[in-house]
Image (cartoon, rainbow, N blue to C red; front, side, top):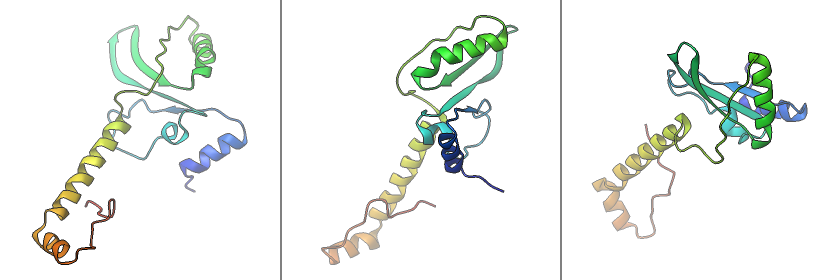
Length: 144
């Protein structure tokens, strides 16, 4: 049985759950479906990712995106699980770079290229001249 991301988010809301989305290997995997944290806008989702390379024997580098109200609870839970204090640095705002942002930029680039190819086609240009009320509807061209 396949459960959609939207169904999971609805169940989390219905049962007042916080979801933890562990996406540690997102950097190595090919692009895949939209992440729960993206769909949820971090309302009920904590997004965790990182870098699999170990910098020193004692360090691992990662990041977490969550609602600011959860930061203290998450720091306490992490410290309890690890048995030592955990240092969290909080930065408010949207990340400047992420796999999702890069995927979205690539989709926009491909869409613009497809629309330009149709717009610049000689036959299409002639038809647009011939039929004055004709136009290319934005978003109606699907890249292949």
